[in-house]
Amino acid sequence: MFLTKEIPVNKKFLPALALSFSLGLNLCFVPRTVGLNISQNTEQSSVKRISTRPKLEVVSQFQGHQLTGEAIIHIHYSRDGRYLLSVATDGLAKLWANDGKFIREFASQPVSMVFNGAFSSDSSQIVTASYDGVVRIWSLQGQLLRELRGHTSGVTDVKFLSKEQGIVSSSDDGTVRYWSKAGNNWFTVTRTGVSRNMDISTQGNLLSITQDIGTITLLSSEGDIIRTIETGQGRLNSVSFSADGKLLVTAGFDGTARVFTLAGKEIVKLKVLDKGWVTGAAFSRDKLIATVSDDGILRLWDLEGNLLDSYNPSLERIGSVTFHPDGKHLAIATYNGTLILLKIK
Image (tube, rainbow, N blue to C red; front, side, top):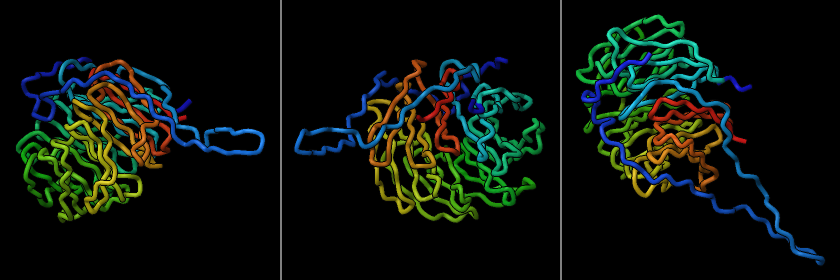
C-alpha cells in the first residue's frame, strides 16, 4: 500500500485571508475526447485512441482536523515523500506517514490558529506560521526548537530557505522577513498589499510570494526583488513552482488558475469556475496541474489546458492540494478537516 482534540476557533479573529468563501456550483465537467488517430486501409476505416487519459483514484480518506464554518487548511508532502503535513485554524499541525497513518501533532501554548507550514529540505524539521505573529520551528519528534518573533500581525506563510540559510515568512503586516538559522531577523522586504502565500523553487534560489492586490513578487534567496508579475486574478490563494523551477501556477479569486513563465508571461489560463474561488493549484513532477476550488471538486489538467479528470468528494469546499514527489500521488484537504489521498492511474 502507498504510505498515506477538538480546539475551539474564535471566528471573529479570522483575518481577511478567510473571511468570505463564495459558493461555487457543484458541477463535475466531463472532459472532451481528444487524441484520436484515424487510419485507413483498403478494407475499412478504424478509429483508435492513441493515448489513455490519466484517472484519479481514491486511496484513503480520513478526518485530519475538526473544523467548522470558515477555516483555513493546508497540506504538504515532505521532499523525500515519506511524510504529509496538515495545518489548520484549529491551532494544530499534524504529521502523517504518506499512507495517512497519524504520527503526532504540534500545538503552541497557548494554542494559536495555524495558517500554514512547511518541511525542511531534509525532512527533519517543520515550521509553522501562526495567527499570534510567531514563527515556530519544530523537530519531527515534536520538540519546539525555536520561536521567531518580529512580525506585528499574523504570519500567513513560511518556508525553509535551505538547511544552511534559514527561514522566510510573510505576514498580514505587509512584510516578508528573512531569518537566520539561529533565529535572527536578517532583513525585511516590504511589499504593497498583504503578502499571503509563497513557494520556494526546488532549486532553492527563488521565492514566489503573492500579494492580495493580485501580484506575485519573485525574490532571490538573498531577498533581492527580481520581478513583479501582474496576474489579473484578484487576490491569490496559492502560488506554486513547477519541479524544474521554470513555471508558476496561481489560484485566484476570479475562478481561474493560470500558468506564468518566470518572465511574467501568461501561457495557460484554466477557467475552473464561472463563480467562486480557485483555492489551490499545484504542479506534478510531469507538469500536470491539479486545482481545487469552492465547488468542492478536484480537477486534473494538462499544460495545454485540457481537463483530464475530476473528483468530487461531496464535502462542499476543498482548501488545498499537494503532489507527492513521485508525481503519481496527491492529497487534498477540505474545509471540514477531511484529508483524502489519491493516485493517478
